[in-house]
Length: 239
Image (tube, rainbow, N blue to C red; front, top):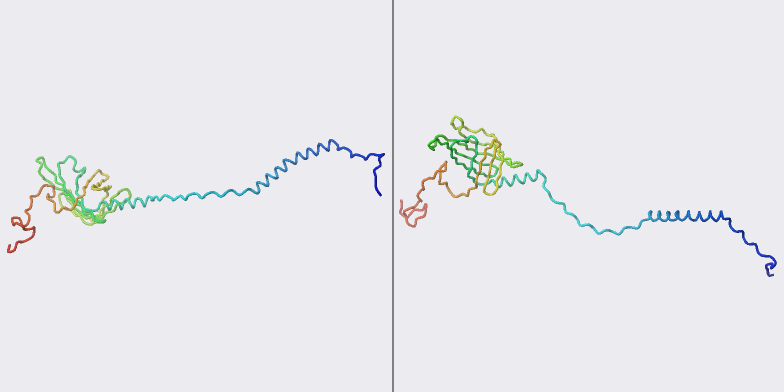
């Protein structure tokens, strides 16, 4: 059996929604949009995208620097090495000789951590003749510490005292200088103003001057007057 609508009656239309409800629904929809957006942003923040791996940075090699003690030790070793050899005293500044006419001659022989130093000082009168002498000679053990501090410790020695007598230096006596040794020159300085300047010497045989630097007469060569003879060589049948 078919069902037909009654043509004489119209189907009832649903009542239109209340304007208040319609406005409330619009307000709810508008309010939900930021909430949904916030939730999406929060989800993105909680699940960040993994960053692209960075290229490895070049490895920096740390600069090698010497500590104070290491640098001082190396400098002390360098000065000690530069001091080795035979030195001639070239300049002598000493307050005890101020205003006096004098001449001097001295040598310093350095080997390892020991040195032998001897100096002769001649005092002159008004006629420029030697009328007094001063002497200092000794074997010392030395050490160069930080800042070029030279400490000499006496092993044996002698000097002319204030009464012009030879006196022996007590073993263990110490003397301190500031030392600079570069190339062919070595300088010692004391806090009282004493200054000694040395120049390096090459071993050229015996000196041709005396203890005060005065020229010595030339010695004749051995074998002189014998043609073809070498020094120290005797001719057959010679005496």
